[in-house]
Length: 447
Image 1 (cartoon, rainbow, N blue to C red):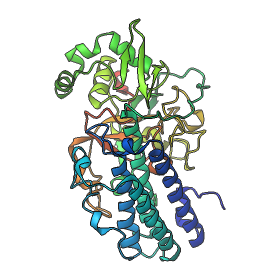
Image 2 (cartoon, one colour):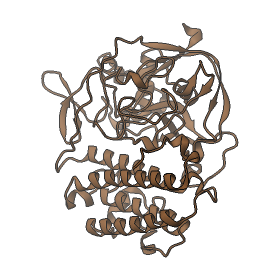
Image 3 (cartoon, one colour):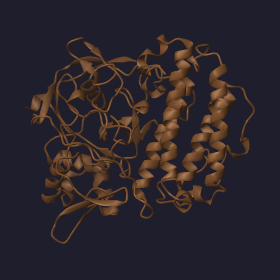
Image 4 (cartoon, rainbow, N blue to C red):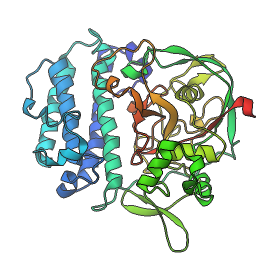
């Protein structure tokens, strides 16, 4: 088997090589989904571990249902496998809190259903003409399904973090950082850059089109804010001082009783611990803080005399190469992520220490922009000028507006197929169960 092609080269692949790449990515996603669901017994699969999340078995069947709708029926023109379950696994018709009350497929029936769908999908992949429509260009519809499955795998990983019973998930810890001490911040010079993409073959509609954005000079943290940084905010009474919080942030902090990141607790001698996939581990000072909401990130930044970066600032820092004067796919260049460049794909179950992965640094010396923790930005989620819905409005358009804030960069639970320099994630500002952290910025004229 030939090595997987970089995503940027998919349009240059011959027909057979493209089909092989798609099959590899479909298989890689399914291996992960299977591992996440095989890790626990049936009671754990069908339980709802938080009203914020679906039962694991719902996510698993939903993955198969979306694959059937898009690839078996829409692309392949084949007869439906289970049209009777479409409504039950429609995320818009069934809020998460209500999904346990549905007559969901059992774990064994779900596995059988996914097997049937995948068998038909591989038959479609063998026979359907590629590059004959926008949906099949460079295998886009297949890539959309791969990304959808990997995104739900990260959602299922977050559900595992919320579980309080059953076996813990396990993975080796990240290696200690080997980078020499880094400067706290770097200057990102003023100027325009190309934001978004019109050429990434599997990019989703909200990443498009490519367009010029002018960004004033600013300073950006070289690494995400660490637990040690955040502990100083806590020790300084940051959760008790309204002046550091926005009005909605302070209201939520009081209503939710926030006193530390989610899953953190303090023992009798004052040491901080956090729950991590079924086990308690010490809070490590040098790891990026995770499981904080936008409001907590904003409060920390205000306390530190800084702010969160805008989405455009984040992307310029992650993609703009001042030497070639162009926007790259990733901070390190156009090549796909590797374990030497980023902490992605659930290879570890925690962020790596700040300063890890020097091979993944940007030309300006900004580290860990990809992987480790999703990074909150100060920008709400909206369309770029020239945005077009493709292939359906419910992917992006229905979420545009002031209710959702953009997160960038991916986390240790994000797969490389669903993460790139242009990829945009979004969520409510109160969300803490996601693998989110942040880094801070400041205006250059304040220096």
